[in-house]
Image (cartoon, rainbow, N blue to C red; front, side, top):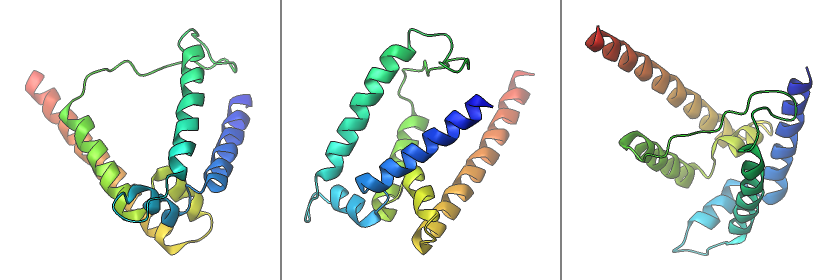
Length: 147
């Protein structure tokens, strides 16, 4: 139960941070991403702050086997850049640039009932479902090739 409460509180703090920083506002995000237009650099400071806090947190997390609440610490170990990572990154960036939302701010904006957020989250869920379907097919093909 403490893990659930900590997760809920973390999500609330994250959502509030997105709102306060303006990252839940697609117009502000698009202003940051539009380098050729009236560029708004304020989100660079938000991202820089997030990277700094995360770097410190990961430095401590690397030294631990269990989190402070007793859950196993499972940090990513992959270091290789492959087609799938680069392709996914490109799709993420294109979607962010078109919509002005990424998953976290999209979910926060969904809570406000904003129609663009409803469309974005619907498309995100559809994309996640399609990915899962393709991954299952891929796993089956690999299993048959090995057998």
